Image 1 (cartoon, rainbow, N blue to C red):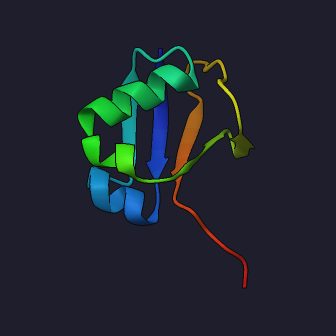
Image 2: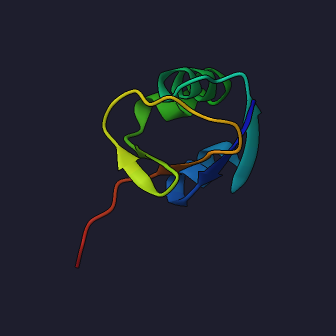
Length: 77
């Protein structure tokens, strides 16, 4: 199973890529663990996760070719 991971703002600064292809993550908790192991600076940053353009608050199952966005904090204005 392969998913696309999109990064934005300060998350892109940490990962150095705007788009990654990730294999081996069955759910968002596994994906977060994998990303934080590969990019330890993520552990000290706040971010949100969206799966297929929907921001999630809890662990979510991932499907082949899902798109996950890692979003830095944002505010309106």
